[in-house]
Image (cartoon, rainbow, N blue to C red; front, side, top):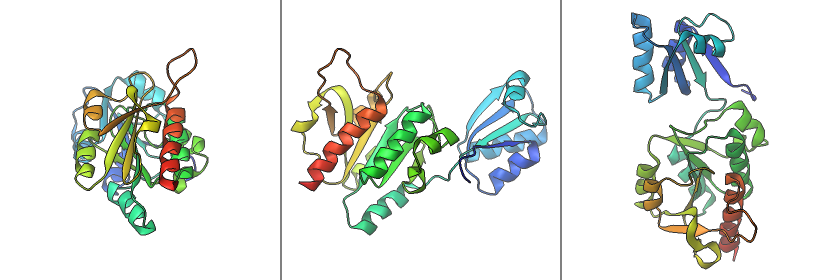
Amino acid sequence: MGYEELKIEGRNAVLEAFRSGKTIDKLYVLDGCQDGPVRTIVREARKHDTILNFVDRERLDQLSETKKHQGVIALAAAYEYAEVEDILAAAEEKGEPPFLFLLDNIEDPHNLGAIIRTANLCGAHGVIIPKRRAVGLTATVAKTSAGAINYTPVAKVTNLSATIKELKERGIWFVCADMGGTTMYDLDLKGPIGLVIGSEGDGVSKLVRENCDFVASIPMKGDIDSLNASVAAGVLAYEIVRQRMS
């Protein structure tokens, strides 16, 4: 699809997009609109766990490109999402222990794009993001990834903590980045691993952190106390690469 972010407007078009299996990241619906076709669209959105936003007409008019939205606008992913199983299969196919990136509340598309680029270059098998409070595969993400989005699968899950628990049962262990952790050079980061990176403002959420096996900190020598999320991901990822190569 190139780098275009797909905006779908009008009741028939939105309903057809859901029924054809297209991945819809967000659905905007005119607040208070309760007629049959809109109720059907909302039902489809809930069935697919799409993020629903009920907004006023002014907001819909701002989003609309056609000015014929009929009370509904859907935002589709610029690229198709993978499944977590696809990522694990890619590792198995290469005969490598899984190396995953899990991103908690990354809302800046430039950060997500840069992290996908890093994941590709350091040999990670895929990236996992949550459905809520996180940016999806938008056009800006695709551009910032510098083409890596075409090669590195990105999966979207309903609950990051639950996904971590499921993957731990399959032998993958998890390390999250946080200032209060053990210096990354003192941790054994070999084997099947998931690297968890949080947002710049809030870091990794409490529940996700509690489900991680280790907390890694990056040594800081300057006058400020935090790195950009994508830079932190790169620093930790390449410590994992170094250890996997040794």
